[in-house]
Length: 623
Ligand code: FE2
Image 1 (cartoon, rainbow, N blue to C red):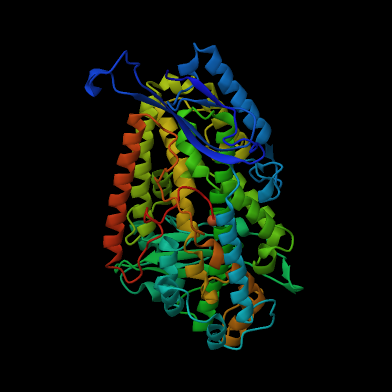
Image 2: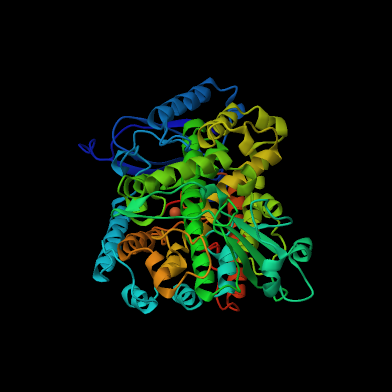
């Protein structure tokens, strides 16, 4: 009976045709007929077939297929099953369509401006929606109680900021508040903060960075030089060039500013990564001084704040929204459109798209809408974000999303204390091993990958709608072998789960003390040294109103609103055969070991890094 279809057509209760009900699965058990009374052991054991459904049903008829995964090739000789695949994909393509959101952006799910308009099966339940709405309201109330809502003007002192913001919301936020001025903590955040994928080794200076050996000699000390440190591989660069020329936004009528800095960091023999030189413009010259740690303290602090502000824009708009949220929507939409329910890759990937449409619609409604949070709180606003994400989509590379390749190309494989790297590699390895097992089960040879038309359509839709057909991104246009498929699937699952957790979950921790993460600046970048004072720094930081708008958001989106699905947790059993279920169990055991190792390491750290503890990582981009 493998591969059989069944129909569910009748409502469970008479007169209940108008009420939708959720069908998880149907089970059919067959027992051998017995001619007469016989001992239990005499006949064959009953056999049960499972028909996964996992969708809301109302009236009419739904066809379910027995749960064994099958590619198109497996059904090649069964006209009924071939027709069922074709019909299912036809329905899906009608319900889930591509639509542009903004020029140069990945395309999104069409005709779904509000969560209520989502196709059935993709809506969140009332419990989750209610919990989310309650937390949004609570965040806004907290902001109003602190007097942050809509308030303009400058802060009178850092103590004033502390009084208004109140107690840090947790131990990490408390650590941030105590260490935000430290150079070592500034460097630490490039490794283990919310944007841990920007830093790269600097074997030679970019031609537009005017730092010289003489400028940094007092900081480096005797017996070395800028050139020697570059040769040793101890210099790293954070380049915010993608922001160059973006700006001009106003908040409450007040102009806002952002810089596109170049920041050079030095890995000291002690293992501390510290900033060595900061140029706030991509264009060197007399108006773009190179700030160094030996400058006047307020000059140096202000230069670091400009870097932190630029880092916020790149992190939030590019690493978080583009590379996690909007790419996850592309992966999920292509999966729904191209792979029928019986396809092994549909069964593998569906849990990693859970609630992604919903949260992205919410993001477009409340963050990216004109006058939304991005307009209220950030330096570049909505117009700048539209430009920045388009630039970042054009500059995207497949390699930067594949963890081992990304670490190699950035030259950061040996830098100590890089917990994001260590944990990301562990999780990448676990996903890769799991995925390789699934691929080996359903694709016996490379030609099976090449000859799977549904799979190739799926790859093509991701390439066409995700990176807009840009071959320079290195995204595959087709897959030719099982290793290529394993890499692509590992990348997708990692991006939808661990990568999003790494760049999402710490947002409130690192931003709750606003001076550590200023989302906008109210004065232009300094064009000379020796002018910064405590007053000018305070006058540059975001207003109370902008701070409140951002913190109300981050206090909500940094935490899942319940109904958790940690990485590798698949309560909806789309795979019904023993072999894939054994692979899932092995995946879960490996993730549990990684979780134990991370917790053991964190026990010895002054500032634990828990964002990639698999128990805290969600299966999908859902917040
Ligand atoms: Fe997120």
